[in-house]
Image (cartoon, rainbow, N blue to C red):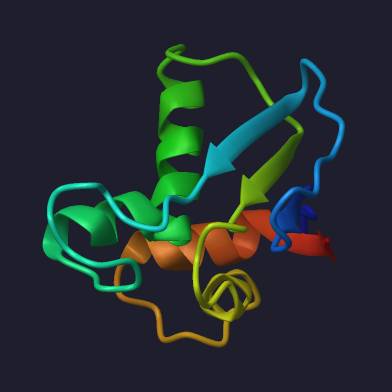
Length: 116
């Protein structure tokens, strides 16, 4: 049985905290809100698509497969603008129910290695 190499994910949860990025690192910033008329922390369908970390990680993989982005070996997710970054931790550690096949793919291919 072939072991699948997983991609490490560093999660930034504290505002103002930074980590070094290099050419092998993909970066995702999760916004507090979209700026289209509702309060911070309120989620609409448009915002849900921009803050679903599993969907965003799956999109990174698909873009890489299609040659739309360079290959990456590490991902940094900036969730410091969110009121509750713990939801991102739960999504990355498999503690939220899978909503789609992409969620299972992300669970197999990505692993949370550090929260800062």
